[in-house]
Structure formats: C-alpha cells, structure tokens
Length: 288
Image (tube, rainbow, N blue to C red; front, side, top):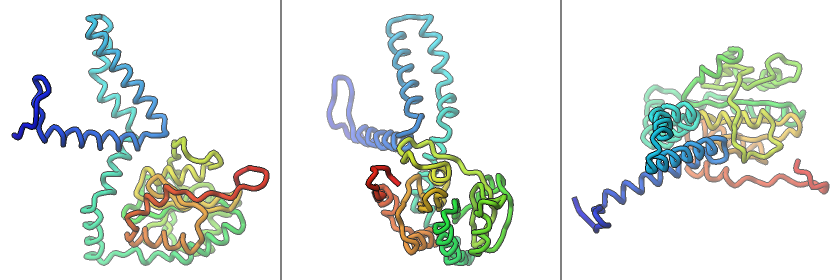
C-alpha cells in the first residue's frame, strides 16, 4: 500500500482517491436519473431525516434516537421500494452502455443469421407521412432485442405484416385500436392498443400531451425507439434514452429508425438529442 500523506490520524492513499472518484461518478449518475422528478424531493427528505438522526444521537436524546434508529434500520429496504423506478433505470443505463453487451449481441445475431433489415421501414415512413398530413395521432414502438411481452400483453396481439394501410387503419380515430401504441419487433406488428409508462420528467415542454409523455417514458424504461405523432399539430418526435428529437424530416426519421434497428447508432446520438430544435413561434407569441 502506497501512502501519500496523513491528515491527522488518517493515512491517505491512491486507493482513497480512486474510491472518492468512483463514488462521485456514482452520485452524479444518480443525480442525472432523478433530476427533474419527484424522487429528488424524496431523497432530500430522507437525507434530512438522517441528519436529524445524527444530531439527536449526538445529543443523547435516547427516545427520539431510538425511534429514528428503527426507521433507519429499514432505510435501505424503504429506499429500494421508493426508488424502484430510478434503480431500474440506473441498471438499464448500465446494461445499455456496456460495450461488451452490444458487441456480444451483434455477434450473436450475426451467428444466428438474425437481422432487423427485414423491417419494412419504407411502409412505416409512408404511413407516417399520411398520418402527419391528416393530423392523426400515432405512437409506434420499435424494439430490437426484446419482444416487450409485458407491454404487448396490455394491448391486442396482432403479429401482422407491416403495411402502410394497416398502420393508417390502426390509428384511424374511429378504430378500436387507435388509443395506445403499436409495438414492432423483427419486422412484424406484434401488438396494438398497448399501454406505455408515462414520463414524470418535469422538464418536458408543457404542451406535450399524454402521447408524447408516453413516448419519452417508454424510452426511459426500455431500450427502444419510439415515434409519436401529435393529433393536434401533426408534428412528429422520436424518443430514445429519455431524450427526444423533433422537427425532423421524414428522411431523417427513416435514417434514425434504420440506425436503431441495425444497431449502428452513432455514439453521439444521445448527446445530439439534448440540443432540441426550437419550434417556430407565431406572432401571437404562443408556441405551436
């Protein structure tokens, strides 16, 4: 063990610096996950309660310290329950960000002869063009590695071929299947009218409706790409990793879908979506 210097009775080593750096990175990642959500307030409340516990323990207030101590005894279990969505997202981020995992899945898919090229993206883009033009609301989930059985079971199972006419029919406002999401996996429409989790991110634009929030929420919870078309304006967004792109041309939308399905997304895609294009502001000053 290499000692660098001493602070009082403490021996500081290189391992301590590495330990502090890793904890800092971990705390920063946790902060990024809970930033803008109600989990921040819960975390601050637990932290304040813990500080009160330390103070009353130091002041030898035995009764109050005993009560708070009992609470702190189950604190880890309580935090797992309270922060279950955030913990799940954190583990998902780790799994998505592992280069070994991506390379392994690519190799496995090649070895098995499995490819996502069978998805007819042209039919999807043609349908999106019509849906945008008629201001018909739509929500389409593209999944690459998982069939999303949990979410598919909330809707109606189809296992149908992807066609422009079928997608337009599903999202027609008079169709019984229009209210919900379509899940596309391995070139097939697996299910329609599926229920998706809604994002609790307070930083989303106030004009985002439930369809857009569901798109962002699904991208936060799963490794998917989601396309949402507004029923009010006909505008289209793509959501990925809790972020979203809007004001895209259909050619750009097609490119993003192909990159996702073929697992050839550029490494800077996640950072690029942070720079959101500004929507035009009419003379009245109201954002459209």
